[in-house]
Image 1: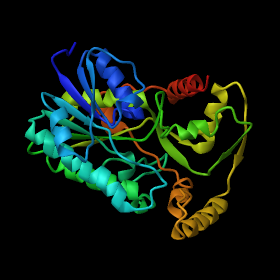
Image 2: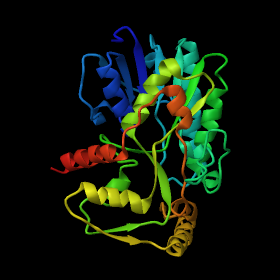
Image 3: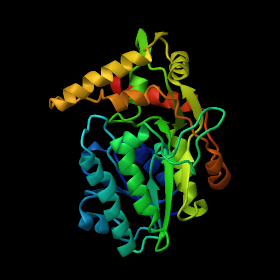
Length: 327
């Protein structure tokens, strides 16, 4: 048990933040959950949990929340594909991270666990998976979200000589407690549907609970200044929805969307955005659905000793949670 160790988790209302808090409490940590609105927290309340309302853009609220903390897990970020300006991503993802690092240094926090994304590294194929040493590749180089996360990670790791800093870089997370929803949108698009339209590409998937395991293991095992891709199964979207079909009562018909249809839709969306009609259907966002962005978990397995869970289990958790919210 770790009853004397206090951990701050930013983004406590998100998919990863909530799941991380749940596991930290199970392991006996004292947890401070930084939220913008405590009413939106969907995890169970616990005597060792304090929800602190604050904002990562407010240095004072961060310094207050970090008092007495041994570790900080920085999950807070914005990733909405509907945001059309880089400046918005930069303000939250980059400036917010700088504030957190500055506050952690001032409060003499032992270790910062920065949560990045696998997509800031170059993806690969099933035969030659992407690794932490691969530089970011197109079309992610044109993604404002990926650009901001890369800049924030570089900023965070640049402080690793003054304080221990580790970056955990999850792939596409699947699991319960996705209240926004964030990555769970991919589940909702197929849940209890008669027809599922799927794009031609593929992604690197991981159970959110495995990402939590990597985060907590990195307290002791993560080497300062290093980044770790946390992923498990590399699947086409078709294979993912076939898995979803096996896990739900209603069996949907799967129909592939041709690449050219998505690219044409992206051009149309670009035009709407230029007219001030904001849409996530942009050329770059839809191009992301046409590639197979696959990654390796070799480094994380070796150094963080994560025992990965079959994706089907995370998918079952996601389905159960979404269905419980509908009842």
